[in-house]
Length: 380
Image 1 (cartoon, rainbow, N blue to C red):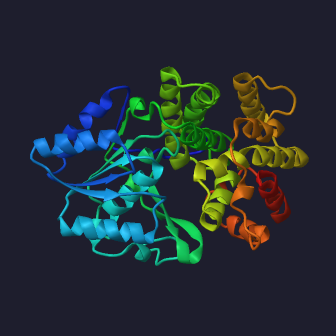
Image 2 (spheres, rainbow, N blue to C red):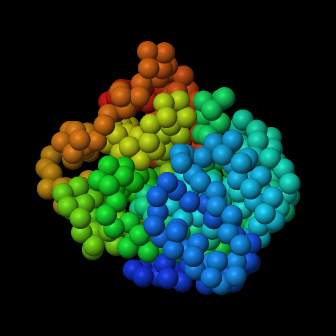
Image 3 (cartoon, rainbow, N blue to C red):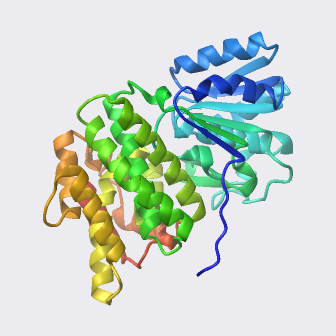
């Protein structure tokens, strides 16, 4: 058996109603709280009241889009001004990534570009991050149990990671009730990201027995939940999707991803399209391309057969199931990437850049530039 390691948040608290524990958990780390929150999350308001009632001082930071360098810098300024000693994020993956980055950089006194991979200094963290508590309100990225924060650098047209094992949250509190009633577009975009993040680790070249077990349990649950939530609100489906998202974060942090995320990181930086939507639109053509390439080389495709059977069962599909993912998303009204592509978008340059992405290194096989361009055209 190939040796492996497994890292995750210091503590994971999962289940309906567990968000009642957040104020007590945060207060246990400190009384000067930096709260990173999204546009409109009622739970964040109640958390502020609970924290203030316990005597804490709360400094809010808003995350209104996927975090970029300027947003992180503003958060660092707010946190340093209030001498915050604990950070909590309440929101989607972007909110959690912003909080994770701020918690990591506050103690060191530096700036985000000093530490970013590729476009910055890439310097390691010099001090341990502040205590960080993650409370997701969408089921998508699994950021509550990963060790990196994705930060956009608009000047470079890229999204890159701030990454360190110490950035894993101290506590991740996953309450599926916080996702109840999410808009359909948000549910589908986040859900497509969640299922992609349990499919790619199962197929990637770095999988291990622990991540395999998580993915094999989560893929059918996530796909079946997505099929239900595409049609209607459902409490059980929300619970299953929250587990799928959590499992995806655990799996990607300890195995790897693949060409979907290798391309998505570059496309997101260039186009500005929602990350989950990009992943959903790339998933079908990447599965087809990977399977075909592996069959040509005589490699074992048993894992692809497993995933295909899971899709067939969840969505009642027959034949070449992977090829039917795109038209299924068309029927759901999920936008194609053509809505964000400009006349000057160079798909060949995007393919070249994606080939160097860390996610691409875990793809189960090599894909040529022409194949990567073809995948993107299929998503457009």
